[in-house]
Image 1 (cartoon, rainbow, N blue to C red):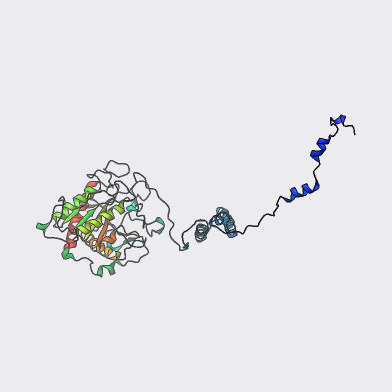
Image 2 (tube, one colour):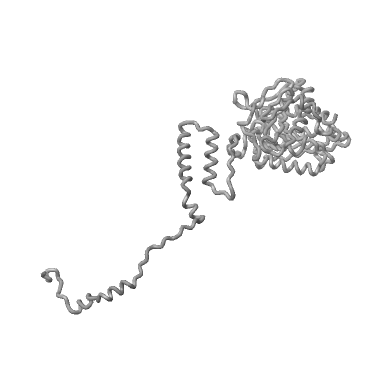
Length: 402
């Protein structure tokens, strides 16, 4: 080989000394390196392992669920199957502290609703908050009646699954001792007094901002107490006082700051009133209804002519326990209302609409004489409502004291 060609010089003794390594030293150097096979670590199941490594059945379920969802877009899926899949999905994917209970009962579907800052009228408050037991449209048996014939006592707008026999109920005992309801006329207190003595009736307004056609507001709501249902409540309190009924009128508008919390707020207030005044036997929650026209264009004007005077029609609303509230004695409230309804129909049959029986309780579990009175509708004027209130006050005072 020609070393010069590759610029490699002849090997020197020194270079050979560096390259030559005794075999014994090579072996010794290699032996100093300890080469061990990788140890097999025992698998310890931890919480992190559980999270990272999902059981095979989760992947299988997810695949089945996805296929079912795709299939649901092409063909309608039975509601019960859909609820089952959703419940199973929640149980598998969502962590829980103890155990997950799956409920497969057929229940009305509920949708979350966000209350607008200035809520529009709702038919008989069907859009009212009642977070625990608000009725849903799916559960309604009948639509709210807008045009009932005279003698409305013979019918009932029943939105519940309960069967009600009006004739049988009227035969039953009146649940409130009438001798305790009123004081003598000279003992009647002014509704404007700071502290009423032994009042029999409490008038409140859960939706106090509800106004009428002449309240100059597009959504039929106003905080002007001279134009909304508070004005109607004040008129009712005055007329009942004139009839010798001791009354307390709460002018607070419980929907003024929060429409969603209105019933919760009025619940707390009525509870306090009943604690302060055990003599209260009747609680009238005065509202304004919002019934649409039959053609769906605007709102109906619910009025009747009585002795040449235009009067807004009235309606009682009675709650039950069907939506989940603790209200087992709701029939006593209904019996109370039927007694008043009968007296009203005997005197002014065209004034009253059919009693509306609802799924929600509307706080009526607090008192056997607790009911909602819907006074007129959006398109009624306040003067029509005040005319009706006078007729109602006269009949109501006689009914609870005779």
